[in-house]
Length: 204
Image (cartoon, rainbow, N blue to C red; front, top):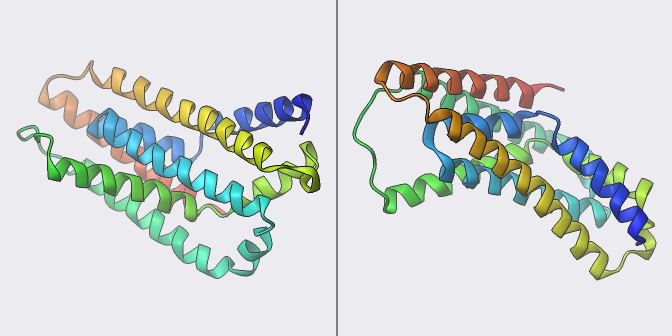
């Protein structure tokens, strides 16, 4: 893979990653509602899904995605239902004592990671996107193991970096809301964003 091809592919990935979608919406909503670490856990799940989709697409598995469309449709619905449930929970939020870090906090991070992964698994178009995009920039037959690893590192830097930036910006905005009424409004805004993310997931 030439340096020119790699830079062109990186630019294309960057442009697509900057386009708001259900994953970005869910990460921002989670950051607003629960803070940075849960949002980063969800973002890590999204990134893991992206890396898996790239690996499968590069290995020629996009045909499997097309033939197993029914399975992915079920996963998509499950992901949308989870986002809707999260939205309802945020709308019903009531103030309480802050949870101390511990086993419960770790479970929260694990649930958010799984939610991000589920969200991506319901977005099979991502795998098809990689399958369609890659041949336009690189010679797939000539790719080496080093090329695959370099592309995966690029995905981690670009997609992971954007996820972190979105979560951090949302958390910073969250800091302006200190009283209970403002926090309730903030949680309902986050819940509404979860509803929007669910609709985006279900969109054909």
